[in-house]
Amino acid sequence: MTEENSNKPPVTIKKSTSKKTSIHDNIEETINPKKVETDNTISFDALSKLLSTNDASGFYDITIPSLGKTYSFKQLTVGQQRSISKNSEDFKDRELQTKIRLGIIKQICLDKDIDPEKFTWPEFVYTLAQIRDNNFTDDIAFTLTCHNKDDEGNECLGKFDYTVDLGSIIKKLETVITEAININKSYSFEMNGHNIEFILNYPITKKYLDMINYGSKFKTKVNDKLEDAEDLSLSAFAYSYIRQIKFDDKPVEGSMYNNIEALSKFIDSTFKFDFNDYLIKLDENFKQYIDVLNITTTCPKCGKEVKFSLDIDDFFIRS
Ligand SMILES: [Zn+2]
View 1 (tube, rainbow, N blue to C red):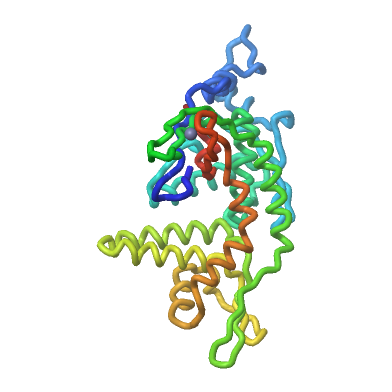
View 2: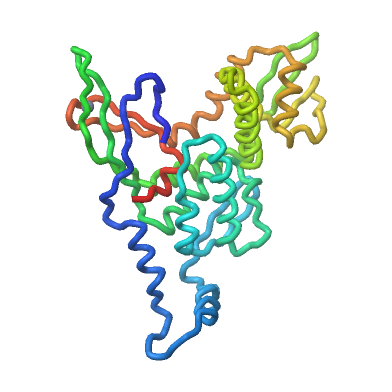
């Protein structure tokens, strides 16, 4: 969960502990499988084999438009539920957590050729939302605290429960990822009499991972210059949207597109353009995805708007 307005967050969120169905209920279901006979004994090995046999009733399909593929997935085991639910605030942990989630997607997919690192970031988020929807409860419950201020500057501090309807988030994400395959965005500028064009689309998950890695590496290297590191991770984030560079309509070819650190350094040291203008264009062009995860509700105590944005960690809240 990230809060809008980092200076004065209008709301704080506490993960709710009073859900109707908790992860523990799912665990209960998993350790009491209906298929295991109780009047005879069965070995651990046989039990494991019996339960790992594909049972089509528990499958669900997820379609990834950018790859033009539909994959079938199995239900999560208790251990996988636990691993996928580990939340993290730390930069470095986020990379590890993303890798764990990528690994689980591979484990539970019936198609062993699946490569979720090639999913675009919104497709990865969509896949995790679908996994949450098919393995945990449908709705995500939060307890919000309102930090809106009255005329005298006193915080409202009203506490109220808010439930996110995951089904509607999934539908909106579906629209975003379906429309993204036909997305035709670019950013152009003139330099030394030449036309430079960046062809843009959502970064694939691999690039997103590289970007976190680059950002965290730099943070440790220059820990006394945190601002520099943040600037660099911001540019790495912004350049991760570049699918191709065109020079006077000629595509620039090479492997550098797959190395966000090298690409960032190249762009920063080669081109002259208004970086803030580029950020604004990115924001305009890819706003649809960001908007899906932004939630606005009303505080029942003061009647003012309360805003927050969903994070993928919120899909796997553990009580
Ligand atoms: Zn309030």
